Length: 138
Image 1 (tube, rainbow, N blue to C red):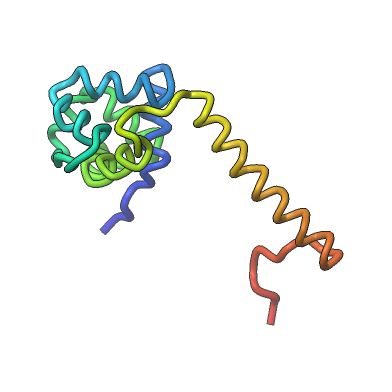
Image 2 (cartoon, helix red, strand yellow):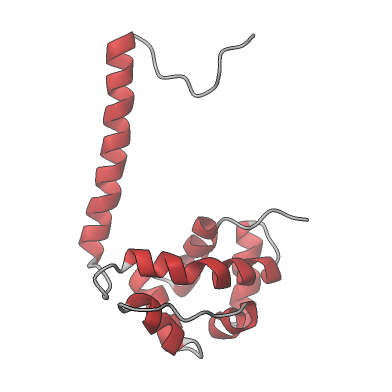
C-alpha cells in the first residue's frame, strides 16, 4: 500500500494551481459544491466531513490530476488525503472563525523560521559545532 500523500505538498499544489494563497484556495472551495462544508471548517463549531469524490468535484478532475502528479501521488490518494485532512487543517488555520490576514500568516512563518535559525545558531555557539542531524556513526 502506498504512503499517504503529504497534505502540505497537496495544499501547496492546490494554492499554486488556483493562482493565489490560502484565501484564494478557500474562496474557490467555498464557491464549489462543498462550500457549506468549507464554511463549517472556517467557522466555529463542528467541521462537516467531505469525501474524496466531493473534493475532486469541487477542485475539478483536471486540476486534481495535476495536483496529484506534482505531489507525486495518484488523484485518488490526493483526494482522499484532502478529504481526511483539510477540515482539521482549515479549522486550525482559522481559530477565530475567520481567515487570518495574509500579513499575519507571513509574520508567523517568518517567526517560525527565525526561531529555528536562532536555535541552530545557539547550538553552534554553545558547542562550537553545528547541531547533529543524524546519530553518530558506529
